[in-house]
Length: 249
Length: 314
Ligand SMILES: Cc1cc2nc3c(=O)[nH]c(=O)nc-3n(C[C@H](O)[C@H](O)[C@H](O)COP(=O)(O)OP(=O)(O)OC[C@H]3O[C@@H](n4cnc5c(N)ncnc54)[C@H](O)[C@@H]3O)c2cc1C
Ligand SMILES: Nc1ncnc2c1ncn2[C@@H]1O[C@H](COP(=O)(O)O)[C@@H](O)[C@H]1O
Image 1 (spheres, rainbow over the protein chains, first blue to last red):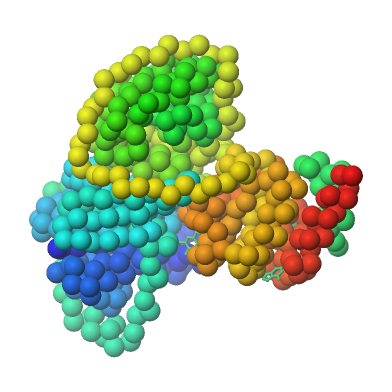
Image 2 (cartoon, each protein chain N blue to C red):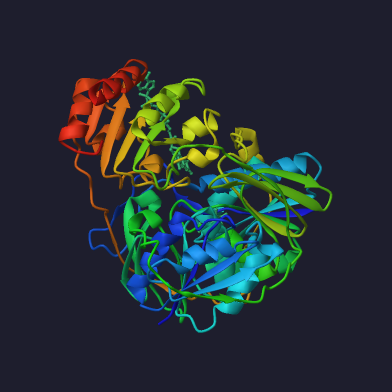
């Protein structure tokens, strides 16, 4: 089984981003960038499949500007065999990313693609489902447990009321939720080794995909800020305030 | 402009989230249809037909829709989509699973999780865990949108009189098999619909200690929520997680107990009307967005709060 993992370079989750002064976009010029946390979980899952003898090869792909190769290198240091960078300076929408991933899957015949459930910058939660649709494959989204058994995969997924278990025949798509696994720390020797692993660059044009945007971002703004309230001294005062001032109980 | 709303339900009842999505649809047009795909779900169609603002209910009742598998429902939605200007669904776990699959096959760039409608092609949505609100315009001929249901009032559930059309099912794709599910049992109000939510974090320390929260929730008729740290530690089940990657809630009263107030948690609760925080660290970020805060040990404050509520009622 050949596994592809999609890894996105995003503003680190600890950073609170703000709009640019002119409100045209977010200010991320000097922000710390990291691998999307859900994608780290996706990489970890794929590497474990290799370690368990279920995957023959694991490839990581990132799509975006040249600096995205740093994220691919991180995936290589976590144990991925080989990297791909689809290089472009254009802003990519989930539908476009899905189309580019379709081209990559077709070029190399992957059996399983693992993505994060959601990129923490655009918060779209779309790409994996779109990829599965375009390929005509089944999807196991928001996975908290994945079991590979030959050419079948069983996925336990997080739902609004608990969890659901599905299974399907490969090829298929899985998207990772937070509780799928805990990604490993990358050790220094592995970072050195990762530098020698192959990392191929391709362009959207070479993949034959039109990447023009369908969505236009007209403005970005800060949400209405809450003003901090008051401290109360004890339970009695709290109940009094909630009842007589806020009138919510 | 005619809008198609994809309903969410459990084959017996219409999910309340769908009512808010119907309101979003009526902001776009007077002509709103509802699509229900399920199995043995005629009662859902009957109650949906009474929702004000709905013109027509299309009902596809077939075994292949029983578990709401996206692989089976997508071909139906794609077939029904012709002639509609917008497809809308609630941004619930089901909506998030299904709609991008539909959008890709219709070659539409979906707009996720909208909180406001500016015009027929322009929407506002939170990005970066709600730290920024983007105004987005779609250039696609058809718009496919998921709706953050806390941002829209629910449509009135009674008084409407839509016609119900039985439509042909699309068949089983055979792509995916349902093996089972676990539903968390709770007699409490639904987390996303409750007027009062009491949430616990890592500060609770254990699953047993969550009983302290339950006592408070009982007093207030509240739903129980949790931070990611509390869910990861196994104190409560995953469907209680509030936040960027969990549920979004906006109750009248939100009480955060032993929760520090990480950006990702705030993303799911900061639209609540009144926020109360109980935390022993006076510098915890949760206090910056709280209307009322108590600095102190939750193990002292929770019992006192339950007792005080009981005392002041009597
Ligand atoms: C990709 C990603 C997505 C995420 N999504 C979510 C999400 O959807 N929802 C979410 O909640 N988090 C999410 N997180 C995690 C988030 O960043 C925080 O780690 C998490 O919210 C912390 O939970 P907490 O406040 O319970 O724990 P902590 O940050 O450890 O805070 C515990 C608090 O309890 C207080 N405390 C301890 N003991 C007591 C006591 N006896 N009395 C009173 N107070 C006490 C402490 O002072 C502290 O403030 C996400 C993170 C990532 C990376
Ligand atoms: N530019 C990208 N490069 C690599 N992977 C991506 C990219 N955009 C999205 N993805 C993948 O798709 C997932 C969901 O992203 P989204 O649909 O944007 O929320 C992410 O967690 C990644 O696995």
